[in-house]
Length: 188
Image: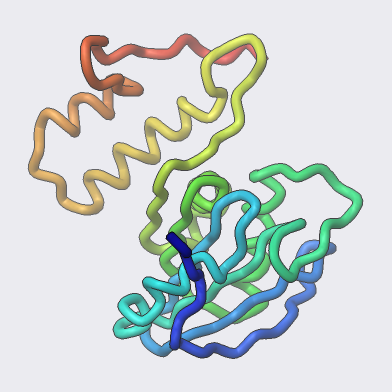
């Protein structure tokens, strides 16, 4: 079985000098802007098969994150918080007004960090299988602000599910045999 990441959708590619890095960015379609962030070891090309569906109603912006695709690595750590800052500066560089930010895996973590660190620059946000940083001595350090963010995200999308609202207000949820759990505060 062969998988191809290309599509019939052709966009314009350019480099944007933002936050000390030269990001490769492709733009496809017209409509409300959506920044779509790829997973680790991938590039924007990984969304090729779904681009035609997304570009029907959105201007899809596909940046290649630091050290991925056509964006070179630079002398700084690969950190999703720094990559999130790159995306926030890219939003300003492209003159976008609160674009939707969506990501998969590594890109999901970057999307969530962008929304948490720069909420005034992001419209709707989404993440599939996000990777978030964790502190060595505790559960994920990002959880307390994320809990607030998730509750706001759910209420802003007008969720009518009281079970989801109460579970997210209580803290992280484990499915299956384990009950919902509150993580302790981060010591560091």
